[in-house]
Amino acid sequence: GGRLPLDILSHHIYPLGAGDGRQMVARSLDPKKLDSAVGKLKAAARVINASSSGLVAPAVSESGGAYNSGQRGVTDGFVSSFWFNDLLGALARHGHAFGCRQAILGGHYALLDLRRRQPAPDFYSLLLWRRLMSPKSLRVVKLKRVLRAASGLAAAPLLNISSAEPDGAEEEESGGNHRAGITAPLLRAYAHCARSSPGHAAHAASGDDSPTLNAWGGVAVLLLNLAPSITHGVGLAGLARTDAPPPRLDFLLTPTRAGLRAPRVALNGVELRAA
Image 1 (cartoon, rainbow, N blue to C red):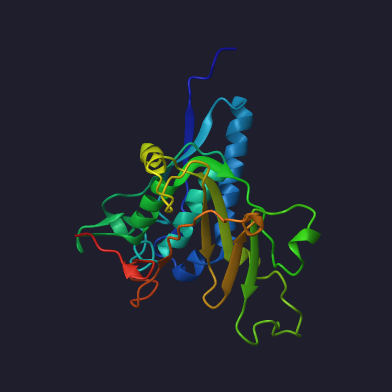
Image 2: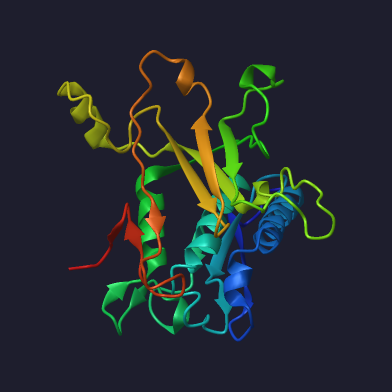
């Protein structure tokens, strides 16, 4: 009848499978593959919570994308950002206390590349997560396509999302059925209360109204576009109805000209490199 002698029960997860697998880039961009990993996190949290009456927290003590040391050009490249950021969002959404990356050094999934003496792209994703996202996860209601006026919706979502596809992409090859909503899984969305910091109070007291990180009451939104040729328009619900919309800071991570497999990443168009 006493308290369980455990605070945390951890498990491992490798969403992409074995490091010697084929079509690893396609796996990294496959929403079904990412959904499968999210489902496993959700199931683990449910079993652990039910078995401990909520007294034990689930956690991931090891994840590196692909086991057996990952795969060069995938788990050490920009394309790794998709599964890794999605995992960070899913861990928080499904009540995990923490997640540990395999590894800091070694293998093709290391956060630090000793050969290049540069951080891997996932290092910068993790750094932004720690700077911007608080532990408080928010529920995101996502529309497949915004085809109606927002006033006609039963409940206003946090994010209003519309998608634009290239000409000819609206028809299925097998008979011309409209693909309304098919782009929705290709845009992943996570939202958190913004991580606050002591420095924000001093900034506000100075009278400077320029946008800053870690604002009290701020919201941080993570968006992942898995589609190579589809653009999405995203609006935060409620902001358009205010006289003075709050300031917004954008952190856009993209591959460089070297491509998805390269161990390089650009932030707002500028390649990131350690000095």
